[in-house]
Length: 62
Image (cartoon, rainbow, N blue to C red; front, side):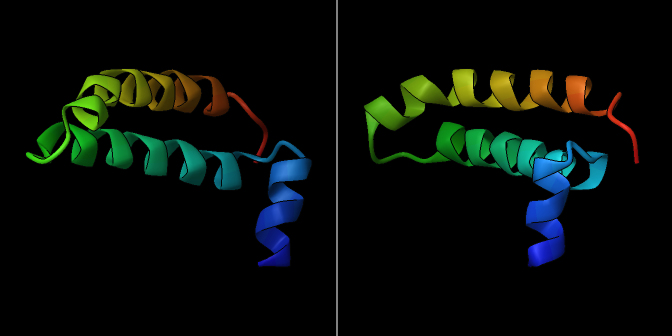
């Protein structure tokens, strides 16, 4: 767990790619849920932020 936070602090690719992937997955889950319209309306933004973040983070050093 400490290694994960050190990776976030040190701008390392692995930890930030995991955060971006979680955001993308969260956005997809928000898109497919049938309960709350407000959650559905933010799903595209969350997915888009996760995707752009993944593109940027893929240029970080290992």
